[in-house]
Amino acid sequence: MAQLFYDSDADLSLLQDKTVAIIGYGSQGHAHALNLKDSGIDVVVGLYEGSRSADKASKDGLEVLNVANASAKADWIMVLLPDEFQKDVYEREIAQHLSPGKVLSFAHGFNIRFGLIKPPAFVDVVMIAPKGPGHTVRWEYQNGQGVPALFAIEQDSSGQARKLAMAYAKGIGGTRAGILETNFKEETETDLFGEQAVLCGGLSELVKAGFETLVDAGYQPELAYFECLHEVKLIVDLMVKGGLTAMRDSISNTAEYGDYVSGPRLITSDTKAEMRKILSDIQDGTFANNFVAECEAGKPEMKKCRDRDASLPIEKVGKSLRSMFSWLKTN
Ligand code: NAD
Ligand code: MG
Image (cartoon, rainbow, N blue to C red):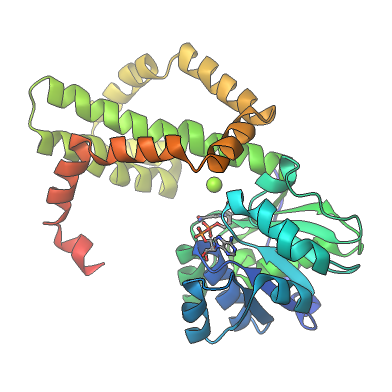
């Protein structure tokens, strides 16, 4: 079993004399900046001129600079921009402000793993990647808890990189829940695979196909929505809390029997063979090249898919049903 590290394993005082620049103030950026600040660390936020997030960061009590000035001022530069903008911003506004002893860090390994960003040898390059959305990272911290995180060392110029990365993970609350060491290659490849094969790609298509099968067979779309989308959360919550076994303890015996006999009819050796192809496209850089090309072209395919899926019957039915859920309104 891999070892997890907790609060007592990490030394926050290593960051006491450092200024951390958080580049980007979105989902992860706001959470890292505010958690570090509440942990007693000096934080500045780096944003492009005219960013809509600037007001928000100032109101949250943070110093806001442009990306170049934040990078110049800081000892530690955490890049929390969308992956597709990181290379450009790094080359234009960050690279020239790196100097020996500084730390360059990321929350996902994409740009380093696929060679889009090539940092100089005289900086430490590390990753601290919370395994949850930024709003949860902030919310848990404020409640005295934390979101588990991965950490990784790509370059250790100072000889301190590992201790520093663990200290940062403590500063954002990660060591309250446990942090696990990985490397940029493993984090990037497993993260991309998980979101494509299971979490986003696999699940969205499964939900859509189930809904369409019921509706095409003449059943009411509202029922199909409840069965194939709404109840996903109930099952996933059970799985997250107690694994497959606890989930199967909670569902009826009828559901459990159906699970065993029908699940393997859907996820077959063909599905697994395709999963291996998806993984190999990730590993050999095919997926990364395609994504970079799509972004450079202005994301035409993504826009097409977004529009297509936004107009699906499941989205229309869902919208009207959800508008009646009182528990969603109060949230
Ligand atoms: P986001 O889209 O929520 O926020 C990005 C921020 O960057 C925004 O403040 C935006 O205004 C700013 N920005 C965009 N273009 C810019 C530019 N050219 N110059 C300066 N600022 C610019 O991004 P996010 O989801 O927080 O992702 C940031 C990083 O964290 C990514 O590497 C992502 O893979 C990683 N990550 C995200 C999550 C998540 O749940 N969202 C979880 C773990 C890791
Ligand atoms: Mg992920």
